[in-house]
Structure formats: structure tokens, C-alpha cells
Length: 481
Image (cartoon, rainbow, N blue to C red; front, side):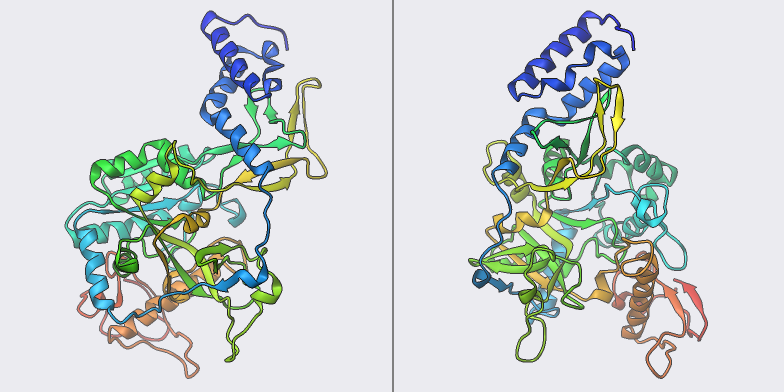
């Protein structure tokens, strides 16, 4: 590529970025700058500005000095959790509903993923997840937020974290679907941050002449993104005090759960900072993090990090001792997120390292090299690492059929097929709980399939007098209510 002259403004940007890189010993990223076109160089400098290289370097140094150390076995205890139906359930539900009615709660969806693993060409949130109508994940959540807003007689803000790879597509998907009936001014989208990948010598890597090799900073980066995007300030200006956090791959999540909010706000008889839902694990090897207690602080240990003798340990009745599986559903106070993400805070989330194969651009050879073995370190953050930072928190047990039907894989466990089965079973249970007959075989298997929109019912009680429910549901029926 022939050398091209740069204008005064671009040359000044180049020198300023070189000074920044020199302060963290990463000037090699611009060694090829004079061989770039102006367009390529501008793209590279824009990325350098967007990444916040000084912060990325700090995180790299932190990761280098903080290798994961498993806690002593004797210090790990099962976390305490609140049963599905607490004694004061009605009062707690009323308390939580009042907070929604008062406009103090926002929904927050982490939606940075693509549907590649599902064979879907687009953002994961656009994947058709409903079992009968094929409604996409984003529409299912939007219907819940619309229904909750109608019940509260107010609009409920929805914050959505995208990623650099799907941000434009996600925004277009919402525009094309007329924002699913929501007011566009109440939807706040922003991309998550990224970390540069770095080699074994601690050098950031190039992916191409005009780009640094980066990876998303993990679901824990959502808190950092709330801060950097201005979402925290937006929440504060709206009077939002609590954030209902969930990830995009779970169509059965309760986007705004009055009972869970009531429990969170009543944590220790003082408003909680971060609370979490759990489901009992189906087996010792189920691939979910496990809520544990270490030194009286609640935390989550990844299934791959929990020693087998603990993951398989049982009590006198034969039940798993470490049974509380994390399902990535939380409520966080805005004040808590504001505190731990502030520039003066010393409570930021730790970074985790993974040694991976990362293709890299070699300027000296003007080509991209794809390694056969791991050659780089990727960093990421986990949302559950915020739990030990909370001074007041709780873990609340919920039901798998009711609230956890994730779509992560193309087939088998946590696939669209398994999710559909759970969604259909939940609808059947709701109809039965509301006093409607539902056809089942002698072994309890469903003989009809029903899908229920959140605009029709947000809980079983809503179906008792709903005119949308037919008088009779017969074997073989396929109904969308």
C-alpha cells in the first residue's frame, strides 16, 4: 500500500493517540499508520478513542495480578435462599407493585448476542421464540412491559444493552417493528464495551490494518455500560430507583416481578442493593453457576469451578446441598450501580481471563494469521461478581417451568424445542390454576398446546375472567390466547 499524506487534523490525532499509547507501552498499534489510507487510519483512531485504552491497560494489569484462586473447601457453604411462597407473600407483592406503579422500576435487557449458534442470522433478540406464533424474544419482553405499564397506568422505561456487532441491526429491528407498540423515547439502547485481546507479551493485537482485536467485556460489563452510556443519569432523571435485569435468551423471564421486587426492597428490613433468583439444579452437572456463601457473603461459583465433591454433595434426605442454580435474573438498585461504577470507586467488578485463539494482523507481512493454538488472552466480567459487593442482598427460589426456558443451543438442552415445551407447560398450568379445564393424558402429558400473551395475562389470576379464554380446550387444540 503506498504512503499517503495526512491532513493537519488527522496528523494531530495520530500524534495524540501515539502519546497515549506510549504511556502504556502499546505504540506498536500505530507502527503501520503511515502505510494506511486516511479512511483506514481514521477508523483505527476512532476505535482507540472508543475503547478507552488507558482503562483497558489497567484491566490487563489487574488481570495479570489476580489469577483465580479457589477458596478453601471448608469455607464454602450453600447460600441461604427464600422459599417460593414466603409467609408475607401478599404484602410483599403489593409493596413491589406499588414501586412499579410509582414509576421507580425500569427493565434492563442484556442483548449483545447474535443468533449464530441457533442458526439464526441476526441479533438473538430477533429470534422467533414463542412456540406457536413465533414471536421474537424482543416482542415477548415488549408485551410484558406494555402490560405492566397498562396495569400501572404509566410508561415503563426499557434499557437494552446491545453489542458493537449487533447494535445497528437491533435498532433497525425495533424500527421495522414500530418499537412493538412502545414509545421510542422510553427505549434506551447502548452497546456494551469491549476489551482488547493481548498476546503473551502483554501487547494489544490488531485484527486488521484499521482495527484492534477486541472481544465483548461480558455480561458484567453491562454495569460499566450503564455508566458510560449515560443510562444511569437517564434513570436518575426519570426517578428510577430499581433495575430489573435479565438476559435476552430467556423468553419466560418475568421482566417486572412485583413479588421479587417486594422481597428485594424488604431485604433485611432495609432496601436491598442486589438480589437474585435461583432454581433448584436438575442434576449435579447442570451447567449453571451455583449460589454459595463464603465468609457470610453470598457469591456465585461457576459450575466449572465448584469442586466435584461439593457439586455432588447431598444432605440426609438425598437432596443436593449446593442446589441453588443461578439463572441471571437480578434486581439492582440504581444507587448501588452508580456507586460501584463511579470513577472514584474501588469496588469495580474483577476481570476474568481466558486463553484463546485470536487471529491477528501482522503489519510487517500485511496479512492476517490464524493461529492453531491459543495465542492471546481475552478479558471479561461477570454480573454475579457484583453480589458480594452488595451490603444487602437475597436469593429467591423460583420454578423452572415458570421462569427459566432459555434458548442457547440449536438442539438438545436449552434449545428452542426445550424452551417451547416449558412455555407450553407453563401456559397449561396457568389455565389449570385459574380454574379452566385442560386436557391431559393419564400420565399427565399435555394433549393440547396453548400460548398465552402477556397482554392477555401476566399471571394465572388474570385468566379467571379473561374473555379471551375459550370455554373449552380440547385435545389436539393449538391456541394462541
